[in-house]
Length: 433
Ligand code: HSE
Image (tube, rainbow, N blue to C red; front, side, top):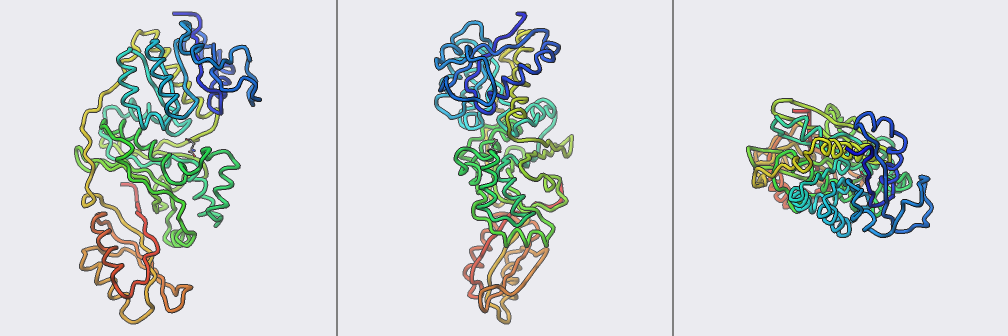
């Protein structure tokens, strides 16, 4: 084994600078773990002149991708440039040149993970992406190695820091959605275009990766039902407080029977007794329920330079250890089950519903009769006069029912003459199962 392993970086943004910094600051620790040093030999950047927050030796910067991808001294390529097409092309080139690849790129892995894993496998290279979900939380290895002998039943994740920050500000301080988003952007959590964060797409990509690893199926982004937080109203969050719920953007990956799975992302009212309810601000957490292990929860910073770089470095270290053992490219686990998505009549949860109804005798009786006919019972009911004339605002929380039945009931409710409007409805998740 060489005295020093050379790595090449594709990109020197927030995460790339963190990786360079960790390699410099923890060189002795890395040597102790690996028995050899690690050095960054070349870094592909777009602009050589750009001012950088981290002071790096300018002689290793290059704008020519061949300096990283075709340098025979470089064994490990770290892709932290983001984006899809260029990153994919470079990673495939790296595999052809027999280099191991570490990436933090959740968008790329969600879209092209299976193709890239196959290319890595063919070339006997490692492809690791610990940093793609949950930033610095040692999550993917925890899931795929730590829980390898278990059967995962449910994964619930707060996997987007921006939306968790916004929801915390709305929930705790009563801040408006717009102001909270602005604060998140100023603090640098949001993606360049916050649409992917607030509309749930960023979380959906991460849930695809978690679902693949949890259930060994060929889940794709199109299989995920996604709803974001941009239409939430403070009124619902205030009712949530009365009901002892916290509003969270939750990614679900549930196995409903042997092979049926549901993957979705949606604003969800969580009972404050649920372990995920205590996860506030920009923090991420993933709650995993395994048949054998029971409940586990992984918590930590979901973004940020040094936290995300620690996840990247855990992959770099694994690839180098594999080099020492001569076992690179052996980690790839093929999907075992053809995906089958759980139909709506087998997806059970409680629901919160807020209605504006005519404030007249018998209005509530009609609504409760409809739910009675549908076989859905109420767990809780709140009512108060609405701000609008002659209307009452009713909030109900149902007992557990199927999504299909709940949607049917909504359609029928909208036809009742006493129902002025269905203002909102949300999935409710209660105590940890
Ligand atoms: N925009 C992402 C978030 C960054 O808010 O969680 C980490 O993927």
